[in-house]
Image 1: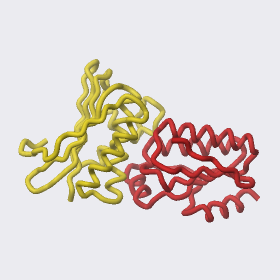
Image 2 (image 1 turned 30 degrees about the horizontal axis):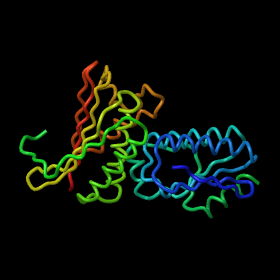
Image 3 (image 1 turned 90 degrees about the vertical axis):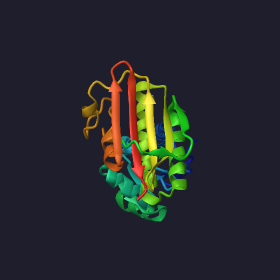
Length: 117
Length: 140
């Protein structure tokens, strides 16, 4: 399942459409990192609303993505973590570290605008 | 594990050999748990736990399988998850259940987190013979 990556001004937006396998997540991470380099983007938004779980692998991959993007001079923000997914992450002791989060796309765009300008 | 428990539905076995099987196993577990009456966060936790044990098989010990069943204990219904492989086995099973312990650069939270959430958790492993994780979550 490939995740479409859209360019929107200074930002790239990946909107996950369904549950993803580990390989899909790794592809997304690498795709977004190379997009940031290619378009010289300042921010990355990942919409995880459709993700069924944020387990240890997904959490690690998102953290790695944010770190790679940061090393390329851009910021990452995750939007749409569902309440039950958030509860599960807390119960399992999974943390996103200092990766930015927002409730929805609008809030994410505002945050990036504030952070990047 | 209790001897009076009975299975109320045929086992559903999902072969685990590659990456996409991990996804198939956790979606099947979520589906069965949902039909059983689990909701909300419990569904996500059950899917996460199955994801962790299935991923361990792919990462360390493939191929193997995840077997899902509905079990009954008196009037209580529960979901049973068995993850088994014929892989190399785990040298130190108690360490594998420690928070932060990982041999594959993961967060090391997979098995310890799973153990905490499930009502019953048993890890059996013999070096050179394989590993079986048996877990149950009862509907409350």
